[in-house]
Length: 193
Image (cartoon, rainbow, N blue to C red; front, side, top):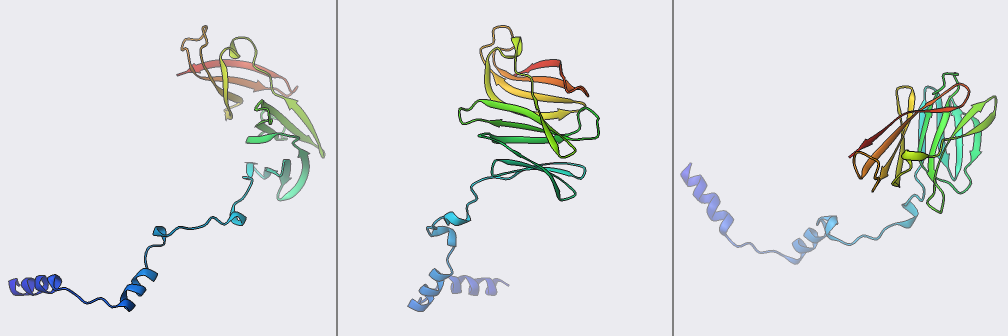
């Protein structure tokens, strides 16, 4: 065993002759990450598709148009004029067996836009989300997001320098109940660090 180890050690220490052909073969097989690569601009997608699903309904934003379909059959289109959609939710919050499509986006002026669309018999009705009022609006700095929690829809955003909050800066969450009469009721507001 010791002899075999000595033989392998001697063999590894011997210099080897490398030919030009060996060098060319090695460089052609070298790691592709070491070489500079050009970006193919045609392969880059300009817009990210945003989808939301509820049972057999699907909401999809494409080229500033909101498309609602059921079982892959287009039911309705809604043009989103100058709104860049950041988030899309699909839910039946008022229990009328018809989904509402909740849209969170922003305008070119960076103003946040939140609304819902309710679809009935081929028509859509825009439902404006309540604006922040009173103590909810103190210190508002943006970073909005929407999410569903049980039977409420929650709007979360950042706030800073609010003299009336328990914490000076952090995240604020406002929980709204959406009723069958298409009204909103603010259920609670929570400030988080």
